[in-house]
Image (cartoon, rainbow, N blue to C red; front, side):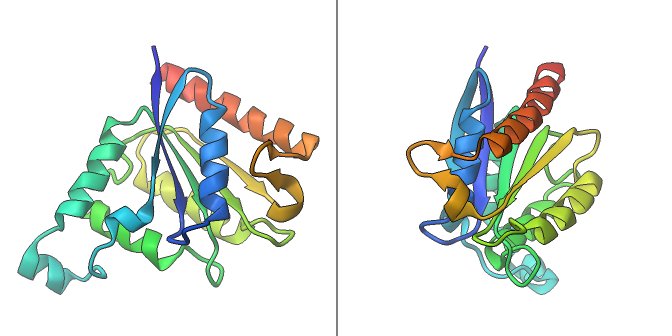
Length: 182
């Protein structure tokens, strides 16, 4: 039976390296069917309680949440803006968290990050791993950081550094076990 994997790069950049990494990793999942989301398709007003009271939760937030709920597992690769989430991602997360408290619908997650630099988005990944543990009740969360994206990733081959590829595959194995047990 095919596993429905929702994947996204947590960036609105049209050529997002994080979207490339999320797509690559999601396609390594055995028996996975990948639904690659683009944050640009879910652009909404910046969240505020006043906007929610005046206009309700935007339909795009409900649409995004429907993808999450329909998934068997979620792969997100985080871009790091000033050491934290991108505004585009944070805004979507803020809106969908208002729909129900279990923001990520208790789905197994593979959280990733990459950047051109040597830390590979590790700061934002640390934030996400800590935060998502509280926002995704009873779910397995695996994580992996790819440093120096341009030196370690090729659009045709994916991750070119064998040690890093082995490390990612180990994290994917944990993710697959959570999918199988879900």
